[in-house]
Amino acid sequence: MQKLNNSEIKVTEVISFILEQFKNEKVNHNLEVTSELILIARILHQRFKINNGLKIKEDQSVILAREEILKEIKNDEYYELIKNFIKDYRQFRDKTVN
Image (cartoon, rainbow, N blue to C red; front, top):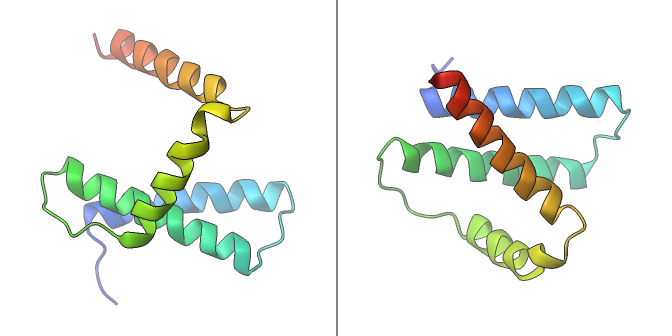
């Protein structure tokens, strides 16, 4: 069995958390859910590699998904909620670290 690198471990942790939430909510694990999880994993893996200073070839599926999301994001009902969550999280993190 191949040993996972740091970014793969982080991605696995996030996907495991999501799967646990799906299990708790009794979300049916079908092909649609699987494709969404694959996309999330690709996005996370790419982001972690970039954050670690690695040059990567961007995944075309990630680029397309991001472009579509950016087109719709400002009209999304969760846009302000997520934006505020990220802002609050940053403030919480900064207070905790200092």
